[in-house]
Length: 558
Image 1 (cartoon, helix red, strand yellow):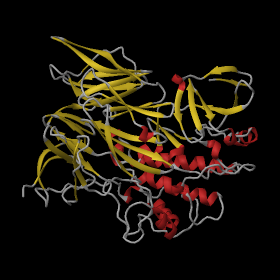
Image 2 (cartoon, helix red, strand yellow; image 1 turned 120 degrees about the vertical axis):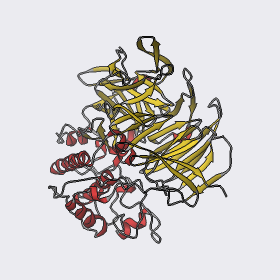
Image 3 (cartoon, rainbow, N blue to C red; image 1 turned 60 degrees about the vertical axis):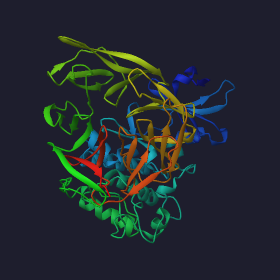
Image 4 (cartoon, helix red, strand yellow; image 1 turned 135 degrees about the vertical axis):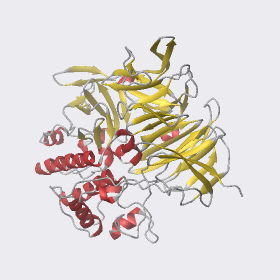
């Protein structure tokens, strides 16, 4: 596609520049500039609205900059700044994400305050956000900045808003104004603190989110239960908790507090010494220095340390470091990115391993590390000599450079609106599958393990969970869709036997086979296993972690 920007000349947008597709059109990226191209000319932003939006001068508000024209001089879109290496705001909500990335309540509060400051700036320019939902914000990977996106939908003095997600719509507002924006802000910022929509959870009589929003019955109400994986309300500063109650329960419409009245502390995890239950035999196995983040085979990663077979080996170099064992000599290797430069350290010796390897993203699956560099996916391989360790990046597949996300065990790319997944079941092997069920969605989280792929995706403010089971070559699959789920971590494990244990949003354990076409599904609700427990495996043995402890779990025999 060839387009033109006045005073800058012609620009060619190719498939390699494609970033994402949405309801209004597509976004392409070249260097530091993003190009939004509308699919429907009737939805096109007008130059006059672009001019009114130019009043927004905060650097973190990614507003339209210049109009884009086709070769016939018709307007087809606009340019804006490109934000590289950022999370969608909703990806920060699950508790497990916060533990993996060391996202503390204090940092979350700073992000909430950045969101608050941006809304105040927008209001000061006589502009309303209206569609203030969690999909319209990005957060820098180091959590230093929060960005406002989809600014073209804002309501300006001469132009009405062009979008509004039901999950943030004020059911008691008769018109859009600053008060309705602050209600939407309350919904989104509450999720930033706690990890759940304030009108989600379960209520015996008010069974839908819409009914609870009309009745002002939020998760702050004692009659509402929430998943165990949510954070405690104590992480919210005292005066903010009072403000949330006024907005969400009492129906008031007030700006949020401007000061903090209490220090945020995350309560210590109370580990219950479970030895059994109605359904399971549970045995405490190992205890560590801090919360367990990951366990695979005999390697355990906590928030601060690395352990092998329960014995402490070395500090974790960085919260985002991936740790694995070399295949022959079982040396412990930590890998991470600084900018686009790969850094590796041999934790067995404490020596840095030189690696002239560049990448934008890393991913770990079954003890193997994969890298994405531009359009290339590569496997990090180890050359183990008697007195030397060397690294190499072995190409395994190709993807679109701007439209590919890496998740544990899978790379998902949006190929001009069509989703494809790349799987790595063995070293040196990559399978690719077309997943039309995901078209039109925004991918929030995903995990693949032993022919099972689970994807959490969003559309129109609703989160759906897709459970795919593939054949041995990933050529065919079946899929189960769990609609309108709470935004919690994807928490499952597949044992060597092919049995999957999945913790659902109702804090129930689902047991089923990873085999395509297998019909049996067993759902177990047992107080001995909480929705906050993280599931792992050791071959045929199911494990879970609670706080800093690792437990073995098995079904109780009849």
